[in-house]
Image (cartoon, rainbow, N blue to C red):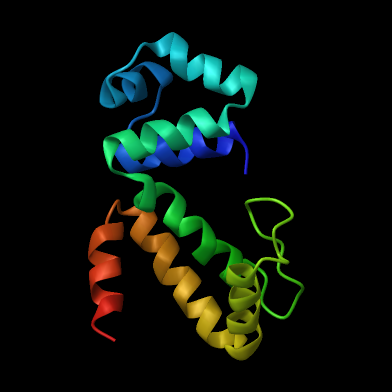
Length: 129
């Protein structure tokens, strides 16, 4: 996952379409967003998300996407080469135990929630199970 990808996720999260609009939502200068892109500043983006209290919303979904997108394959974690850590081994185990049809249904529902900017409702619905 690189800074451009994360900036796109932030734009989706805030339902904005430009760096300027995103900068306003993040209460920062547009040049800072451009700097994130140019320097591929993933850590700076993480820091800002923690500061704003949206870290889970932005980065928590990455693990879900990783598990879903790697059904039946060796999981490649979006955080890099961390599959040897115990937490990531648990993800791989879950990945190997859930059938592809369930992954695909979840993925479709997840994508629809993202498109409709309704991820919070989607999560609440999942928590009922």
